Image 1: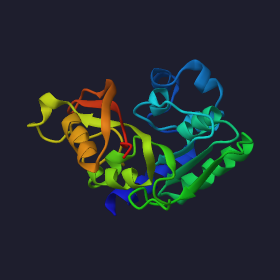
Image 2 (image 1 turned 90 degrees about the vertical axis):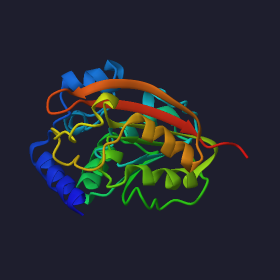
Image 3 (image 1 turned 30 degrees about the vertical axis):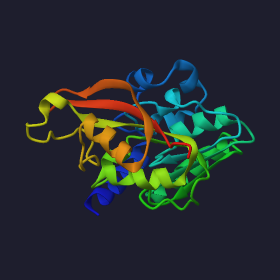
Length: 237
């Protein structure tokens, strides 16, 4: 509950100022291409929070059903909706109703017909089993008390042969014995673990073809924090 409250408080401040600590052309230009940024409304860009760009590493198809867990303002949702086309659908899920309302207003401005946002818990997805083509998340799992616990739920909703792609934060493997670093972002106070635990948790949930696509440094003061983008597939039985 403490994590949820911190996140809600942070969102309220962000909505009042229309800014986020990870936003700004410098950081977003590192994560997104110029063409991607140009295709998104300025309000979305100003409030975007992310540690990577999972949309760059997903093999989307026209007509895909995509779910973004912990979608925030919906930056990756808007990008994915353009790729899956009018016969596809993107669902953004976030636990904070204020951010969902804001995302809906931006969705209407952009006239996105194949996109919707709902208020919900990513740990209990309100989705039937084996109907989703892609699950993605960006800077959201680290806000969970036990981030690794979500992978069985992701596995449940994915079709056989479907993909998950997550961008988030990890501890530098060389710093595991050091004190947990304090973070720049006040809402990211939960368990940030290392890449090996990401891989083992995905495998334990049943995923195969696990790949690390990208590693980058987010923070080097007060403890080394890295970004990671990792993906896996649900096997075809």
